Image (cartoon, rainbow, N blue to C red; front, side, top):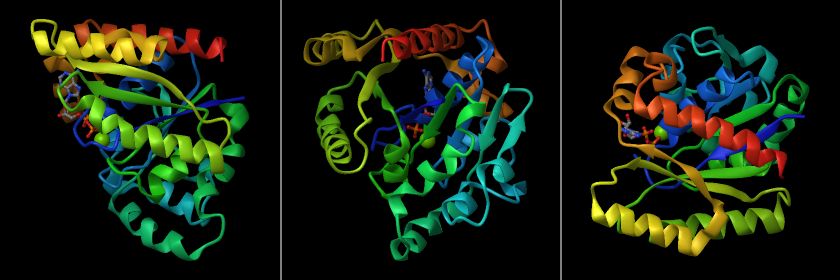
Length: 256
Ligand code: ADP
Ligand code: MG
């Protein structure tokens, strides 16, 4: 049975997509069967996995509207070693189109159930909002991975996300929990980042992953080559950290 994780944080530019594609590549590298689902109309995780979003005939949009199955719409990224259920601009329309339909927040959950046995991990890259798309992600997930930059407002932004997760847990998905907070783009030379990091550990204890993802330019360069950093430059510090994080995830779900 696949373990399904959303990578979510309603702030933009915090490292969700980078985390999703590099964790997917890291898990694939250590032998896990992975499906990466792009739930952001920007399609960055799709492009960053070597799949051209403009050339896709079927995407997660078709799956949400039940005009295609996951098996029909997914594509294989050979370079990255995982499957991709891609997204493009069309997905922005789903938000409106889903308003009219039944079970609208459960569409993705139902669709993923059909491929459950084929994967060890399903990773969902969420858009920077707490929208119907994110809700579809949260409804099917066992856990949420929250990437965070250790900056002054980091904790404040977390409150909304934590409340949304509590509501989804209470009303729609009793499996849902925050599996962990991942410190990303970390620069240990910056005192404030160290302080916020300590605050995070004080507040959230072992919900904070041990692995820390450093700020690393190779991770930022990789998307322009259509690759996760882990594939683009495996020896870069950021890539090594993401493989370490993949191992920590495998370890953590054993205890779930
Ligand atoms: P989000 O999906 O939350 O909007 P992204 O993953 O797209 O965020 O990251 C925002 C920007 O930060 C991108 O340009 C990305 O390449 C860069 N970035 C993300 N993580 C790192 C990192 N660890 N080191 C350096 N740059 C990073
Ligand atoms: Mg993104």
